[in-house]
Each structure stands twice: as structure tokens, then as C-alpha cells.
Image (cartoon, one colour):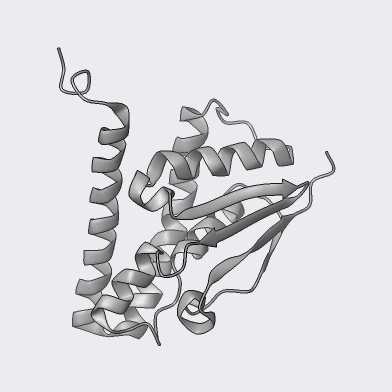
Amino acid sequence: MSVLDRHEKGRIRDLLGKGWLTHDGMWFFSVYQRLGVEQANVLNKAAIQSLAPIETSRARKLLGFKDSDIETFAELRDFLLDSLELILPESVFSRAHFDAPEMNTIRWEWEKGECFAYKGMKQIGILDDYECGVMFRIECWLQALGIPYEIEPKIDKCIMHEKGACRGEIKTFFDD
């Protein structure tokens, strides 16, 4: 029996997701220490942007979209929610609430103080200068998928830090 067969899928997902989050955080921290927060933000966003087409392609294949475009809002909603559930550890996924309350609207909200990036940047003391990579990643996914969208509020810095809450809406423009 293989090691994958001996362990629950959720525990495997958590192990891999936590490994990714830890690597991401330590990568950002290392760049910050060597080059400063401005360069860490620039390089972090460049890495996210170059990763998005690869990541969305892999997720589309796993979720059964193959190489076809996502053509309806329902497909986009399912793709985003399922992808986030797959890549985020349960301890993170359970604190981020993504839903689609109406056609062409995806709403998100992190529980107060619970965004993993917010917590990490707070721990190293650079919240004033950190540019959100979490929602930037979602935006890069939408760009990689060729989905026209608007996001409100516009995000640059950490809005959990600036406004006390991280929540907003992504509006898409499907006709279905």
C-alpha cells in the first residue's frame, strides 16, 4: 500500500498546502531581509503573475475543464471555489469565505485578523508597506483565464490592516 493510500486526502492536502504557504512566506521574508520590502513586493507579484497561467492550467485539467475556456459564470464560480479548496489547507480555507451570491458576483471575506499573509506580515512588522499578494493571485488567475472583471475595493496594500477587514467583490461580465 502506497503512502498516499495510507493517509486521508484532507491531511495530505493540508501537508502540501502548509508546505506551499510556508515556502511562500519564507521566500518573501528572505527577499525582504536582503532587498527590502519594496523589492519583495515587486518580486512577489512578478512570481505570482508568472505562476498564474501554469497554476490555472493545472487546476483546469484536474477539475475536468481540459484546455477549454471557462465560458459561463457557473463554470468560473466552480473553478475558483474548487481550486481554492484544493490548494488551501483546511486551517486557512475555513477562515476565508468565498461565495457567489448572485450572477457575475464573487464575494470574499477573511475572518478578522485571519488572513495568512496578514498574520505573517504582522509578525515580521511590515504591514504598512506590504502589497497584498493573496487577492493579486486571484486577479492573476482571472487574467490568465481571460475573464473580464472588476474588483472592489481595488487592492494594493493590505486592506485587513488599512480598513480592519478584508472583504470585497469581484464582478465578472458573463451573459449566461
